Length: 177
Image 1 (tube, rainbow, N blue to C red):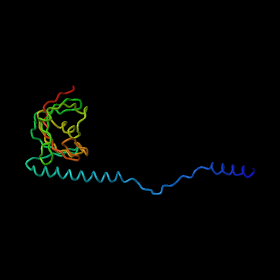
Image 2: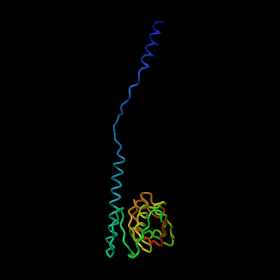
Image 3: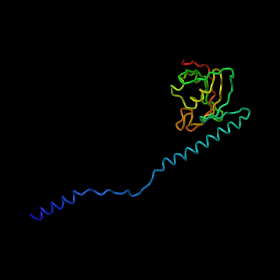
Image 4: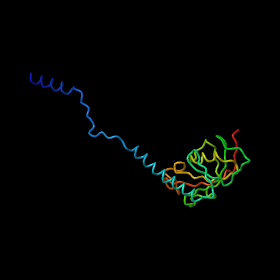
């Protein structure tokens, strides 16, 4: 009996000790973020080269570099009007989308006139920024890298990571005041 009690006490004493934490076999930091950054740098370089080549081949026009990460050139410029759309204004515009090889993806007839409440509705970031540069009656050709358009996902006829050429006509600005 003494032996049984001794064994029970021994088992309880051994089983009540806290388990020792195990150390990981391999300590490896995640490289996903680093790889993603490198992949995006390569994509951006390829797209920027395609857009620079587009501008080089269109040597008759002068392109303006936007601080928002795209290029543009005026097709029709109105130097008499001063009103630019601001947050809350409603604009009516028409546009077409081409790729950098001038292949038409979506025409103005197919897309029709669009209404947009400036900075109050969803729209690709390039077009949000671009419309704020336009006066009523102006037409601008925008060169958007994919991160200012449809990104890595693309959309229907637009492939992922595809830089795009937008030709936009601002038809009307209705102020919110």
